[in-house]
View 1: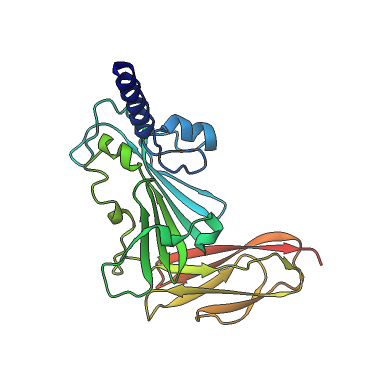
View 2: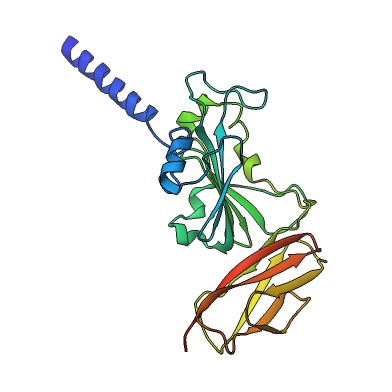
Length: 257
C-alpha cells in the first residue's frame, strides 16, 4: 500500500512538472517567455540593438517583438527572468487572411469586442491557455498576438493581466484602419489588375500611386484598375494614402506573357 501511494505521488509530480512546461504557441520558432533577443537575431538577423524598436517585415507580415529589458514601473517580472526575454510577438497582416489559413477554428476561442467605439465587424478571439490572440475585421484576421501561455504568465503577471488590451482598437487613431485587397495571383504583362481596400471610416481622402504601370480608373476611390501593358517581369508596388497622412502598400507580381 505504501509503495502504491509513493508511486501515485511520483506520477502526480511528473504530471505537475509537464503541466508547468506547457509552452505558448510559437511564431516561426520564437516563443514568448521562452525565447530571447539572441534567438530572434539568430533566426532572422533582426533586432540586434536593444535601444531600437524590434520591427521588421517578413512576407505578408509586419512584425513587432517586445522584450523584457529589466524591471521598470511599467513592466515588473520575475527576478529569474533574464533581460532580453521575448514577452510579446505582434504580427499585422498586410493582406488579411481567413482563420482556415492558420488551421484554426475560431469556435474554439473565447470571443470579445476588440473595438472601444461603435465600429462594426471587429472581433477579437483569444486562446488564453496557449497565449494566442486574433483580431478580425469582417471575419478575416488582420492581427495576431503571441503572448505567454497561461502557465507562464506568472513570470510577468501585471504585463499579461488584461491580454485583450493587446489587440483593442480605438477608432479615433491618428490613422484609420485600412485593409488593402491585393491580387490573389500573379498577373501577366498586358493584363489589367484591380486593387481595392476596406476602411473603418466612412469618409477618407484617398490617393493611389504605382511604381510601374498606369492607373486607368478609380483614382480617389476605394478601388483602382492598373494597366500593365509594356511592363517587364517584375514586382511593383501599389500604394494607397489615406487623409494625406497614412499609407499602405500592396506588392503586385508581373509574369511574362
